[in-house]
Length: 177
Image (cartoon, rainbow, N blue to C red; front, side):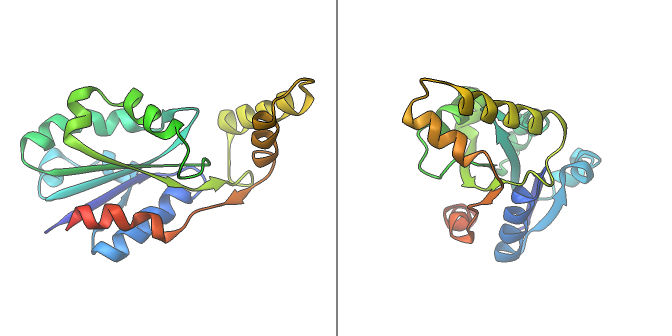
């Protein structure tokens, strides 16, 4: 079985998972920028395609590119997977809701989805995402009647952290078999 892993990573967590998946499954691994240049015929040579992207505020980065490919690839009998990586813990109840918001019901049925906790790396983060997160932390830190949940979230997001773990890829690897 020929497998391709494509990933879009801003600070390295999604890339780390892509490399782990590739190593464990024997898959080819491409950065999103390289994959965008691939012709449809080249993509169709793979039996399974795994797309990984980072998520922030329920927005999956560069997912629309993969969604445009889904109908043609699913129609060709390809196994399709999407994993997203973010700073939320694996058991966060918001993850499933975010997945459902970013996929139509038709896409949801043709794609297996996974969430992997990654973290935050402020040193590698750029532009708007960094601005949003730092603004969010400042707002909650100054909020007079912040709930305990808001205080915990502000504390967690106030610094870089890494909660990635190779163990999280096991269900995806099982599905690739």
